[in-house]
Image (cartoon, one colour):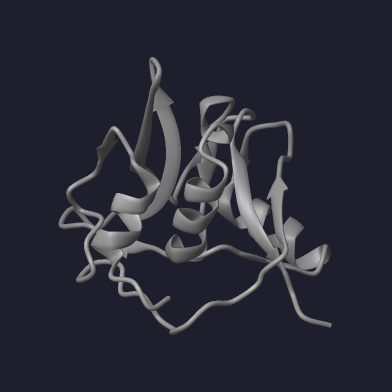
Length: 135
């Protein structure tokens, strides 16, 4: 958390990232380092963000933030080549009024950091980064 958002993105070595992923739109909260227990949530079906969040809550998980997604992407860069991964714990409302969330994905062999739409359904291939809540 001691790094700027721009530095976090650089450490991830993404081939492309969405210009709207800025410190203004996605302020990073916290400082120092934090150990977290990451979990990838896969419902294996089309689901809304609300359904995914309800599943997380029932399983003592919380949605990961953008900073956590970037840490995950830097540590495990190949996983996003297998399937897209979203962090529902950070969001931004764009000029059109759409709520957007950060996602890791791929295009060909390139690794991407993009934005997905919170509203609507996610197709069954998506994974959602979650963090185990402290007991």
